[in-house]
Every structure is written in structure tokens, then in C-alpha cells.
Image (cartoon, rainbow, N blue to C red; front, side, top):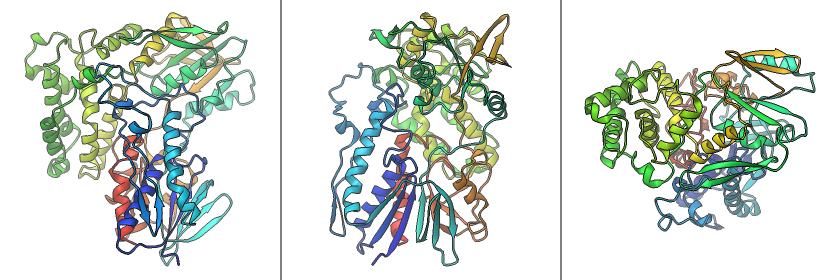
Length: 576
């Protein structure tokens, strides 16, 4: 007899870890409830999801060094007499022993497909015994609607069927489709019947456009956006036309070796024209920016103070807590810009002013008006410890080390919605530094500039006009015509921008009166949705970027394997 019927919608990394934790918590309970587990994953990539699809191009790199990719092992679980085998942690699976790998060795950033293979294998070993004993059922179907009945049961509607009498649902969905910007709508409308002009609204999957640029015809590719996705687009466009060769391991300096007579030009651009900033090359350099345990403890205590959160009128309480750490680390670095000319307090003040206004100018801060190739070379010098470090570079790296603490202390905080939005906006602004790519990616950009393939003349907010042949970008007295455009700008986690049927059904369904606002859906600390009228927990939980209270990093794979899925699983089993 089935005691509980539970569904998980979205079985990528987060859904996988949630399912593992749920079965583990059930196995630890004295009364081992008999469950039926319905798992829905539209892409069919169970365990790894679309982001970590195993058939994507190898040039799509994960943006986390393998050194810190500490995905935990799964211990053997015995549930109702069913044995689910253990599965190794990522480092063991990938045969990486960082006790033996030197701290001066360059960090590695694997293809996302490699991580996908780990996740896929992990899911298969977990689910096989459950499928065999008819505990779990897999559905490669798109869920479009969720309904709550009078008896508190949930029904789930897909494009082909409705599943009723579900006791509880966990939504572990990741990126959802969003409304297209007016600019992209205009472009699509203008070129939808023009076969000579190609517009791609999403940078993934790369295979959608890889062959469009791999032709004998001259192709000029515009890339809207200058962030991490642009780098994947850049490599993807050239994937069949040559390869990068590292010519200096100490700095990852590279050159592009063309296998064909290249006729491709790539032209990226963004509003501010500022490129992503590389992470430090290796552990030794990265550790220079790592706060001490005492600094982290004091930082968490300060920003986690609920009174301070309630009284906050803006982001100052957060910035004031981090800039003393920044100043202490910056003034202790072996090679910086002009620090001898400034007191500790002046460095601290400069850091505060820059974090709260990145247009702030100071001799310790790298001027953003610097030509982009010079900017890239400067960042590479800092990331490889070959040149003096600017204060803004230091801030970005310290911020990255503090992000887990920010996420932990400011999730489910006492800040007003207005302040919370400002915190999210600030973190998005700092991401150019804190979420930077490996040094090798920036060296690849320079290699393509040298080869005449990457044109950086139009990076900063060019004038864009439409022609019969595509887009004409101009700046000053220069112009260029593009016949292919790829949008690489990814959406911010704002629920009001999401257009998926499932999310809209949640927001506007009268049977599920949930608390939500411009930021996202309000949940309890263990992930359950809250009913507007009663403030009671609903039998629907939500983990991930659409849950209000999730500040940063929710899509990062380390967060998918973080505390939230565990807390949900404990509550789901207790509420059986």
C-alpha cells in the first residue's frame, strides 16, 4: 500500500540531490513509509538536466574550478529492504587528488558535459533499484499546470496527461523561458522571412548555430552581451574551424590555429563594454584573497544581525561589513597599486565608494575607460600574479570568497523588499569580477584579436541600425555589417519576467494562493510555498532561483548540492 505519492518536477542536479536526500531521510525514519516517487524532466536528461547535457560541445566550460567542486559522495542507503549503492564524490570519480596536485598548478575548468556525465551516472545508480521495485517512475514530459484540490491533494498536468492524488510536489526547476526584450522582438520580426540573416535568441545549445558559421561564405557574427556566455559562443562559433594552442603554461597565453581558410569575424558588444575579469590562475594566488576564518565569522555575524537587516535602508550594512576585510587583504598583498601612498582607512573608504558606485574613480582602481585589450592584459597580469593588483580586482575576488556567507546569512532575511532588490542588483554588478572566467578564456579572446577574428572595436554600446542584410553597428567613424546575431544575455532571476506555463499557473492559480512579489515566490526555510490567506505551508515546495529569499548562486552546482535540498527532504519526511 502506498502511503505517500510525491512528485519532483525538474530532475537536474538539484532535483537529483533532493531525491537522494528524500530517500535517505526515509531510510533513517523509524516508520519507513512506502512512497511512490514521480520524477518529471522535460529534457530527458535525468540527473544532469539541460545545462549539463552530455552531448553539448566540449567548448562549454563550467565556471567553477575543479579544485572547489566538492560534490559530496552518496553513502549506501537501505530503504524498505531496497539497497541503493553508494556513489563517489566528484573528485574521486574524476581521479583528482588535490593533496598531491601542487598549489601552483593552474586550476582546471572542465567541460560541462563532463560534469553531466558524473551526474548522469550518479542518477542511474540511484534510480535503478527504485525503478526495479516500482518505487520511482520517470516521465519525460513538460509540466504545464499544478492544481490543489479541496482535500489538499495535488494534480499535475503535462502536455499529454494529468496525474492526480499526489500528496506533495517539489519544484526543482532551473532557468525558465522569459519574455523577449522589445529589441529582440523587433529584430525577430524584421528578419523572420530573410533566409540570409540569422538571429539566435539564446546562446545554448551551441549546436543550433555551430553550422551556420561553419561555411565557405564570409560570416560576420554579432554577439549581444560580453559575459561568460559570450565566451561559450565565441568558442562554439569556431569549434569546427580550428583550435586554441597554449604557448605559455605560466600565463595560459594562447594562439588560434585555423584548420580552414577562416572567413568568420566575431563582434561582441554590450551597454558598458566591460569584459569579464578572470579568476586567479591557481590556489596559491587565489589564497591571497581568501579571508581568515575569524574574518568570515565576524562578517557573518554582522550581516546576519536581524536588527541591522530590519533597519537597513540600502546596501550599506553589507558593504560596511566587507570593506574592512578587503582593505586588510589588499594592504597585505605583495604587489599593489600605490598602497604606500594611502592609509588603511583611505583604502577602506575607496573600496566602499567603488562597491556602491562603480563609476567612482581612484588611483587604486583600474580605469574602465582603458582600451579593452589593455584592460584584458591588465586583468591577466593580476590573475597570474605577474603585475600589480588594482583595488577593484581585489574586491571582486574577496567578494567571491564571501559569497557563500552572504547567501547563507541573507537568505530569508529581515530586509525590506526594496533593500533586498538592491542587494541582488549589487551582487549582479560585482559578478563581472566574482563570477569571472578562467585566465585561459581571456587569453583566447586576445588570441582571436591577434588573429583578426575577434573585433572589439564596437564593444561599448554601439549604434545599431537594421539593413536588408542584417545589422549595422557603428561607433565614431567606424561601422560594420553583421549577418548573424547571437543573443548571449541571460535573464536575471525575476519571476515577473518568466513566461513558462508552469510558473504562470502557480502565480495566477486561484486554487494555489501563494505569496509572491516582483522578486519571487515566498517560501519557508525548508522550501514550502506559503498560502496568502492563512500563511500556512502548502504541499508544494520550491527550490532554486524563483524562490524569494534566494540571493545569489542558486544556479551554481555547489548550491544544487547545498543545504536547501537536505532541509526540504527532512521536512518532507517529517510531514509524511
